[in-house]
Image (cartoon, rainbow, N blue to C red; front, side, top):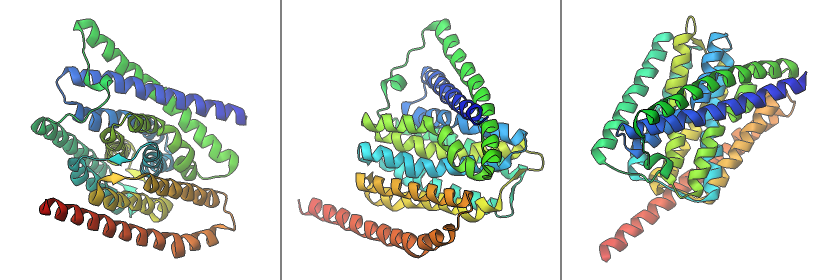
Length: 367
């Protein structure tokens, strides 16, 4: 029985990754053929396409009444996006960002993450709140498109995105077929992943929320991990971070907004997620501000710092899911030592980077 669950989950993940790849490939080529800039394609089409597995799982879970899976998948995926994907990507190569992305998109993620928490404190995302989230995503997308057209920037995305030629009628049909195939694979993969997650939770006595925060989130975030890691190795920092930021924004506004609209009476949000997991998601988003806004670069040691925090988070989820007696001591250690140490480290980082920036400015002025 256990092997059937594992095989079903793995097959579902392959279907999700394959579906996201087909959807991104087809949609990006259609967008490029329609004259949309590569910067906008990276921030929207690629980012939203790699989040399609989360959307597929959320819709399936919402229609079948598994709200814990929907919320856990999004919160877990966003934590994983920042701590694991950026951590791994920066270990491959230090990540530098354009100032435009730093000034607008990184702070927006922190604001949207906090807004989700405030909307969820009553234990439910109402349908009208889901509609507001979707409208926010539409507004962000329109602004990104307008911003890309006005600036005319080309952010150096891979040739597969920038050198696109859709040759005639057959070319359009081929790329439309890729989009349709991607959607079909996402539908099939999401059904397999959700069913396997429910079976895992029942078989091991672990809550659906914990399973979704870990196993399901890792499975559905594989497209983001593959895309960002490959971009980092190729020296494309904007797509590395743009994919993470855009995907995280889409997860909150698009995925949870859609799930809230589809769920009768709105989407139930587990209070455990509101009290414990969403604050961690907000903290991860806020941690990007001093890292990027002051220095506009994520060094290798900072990536290792992020990666270590993700391992710490997974260990906490394991202790919580198994109701281990060590959970209380682990939580006290986190609250009394790790979190204060993190705050001091971030403050020291802000001070050091601000001092270095001021010194560069003075040197430039003297020259």
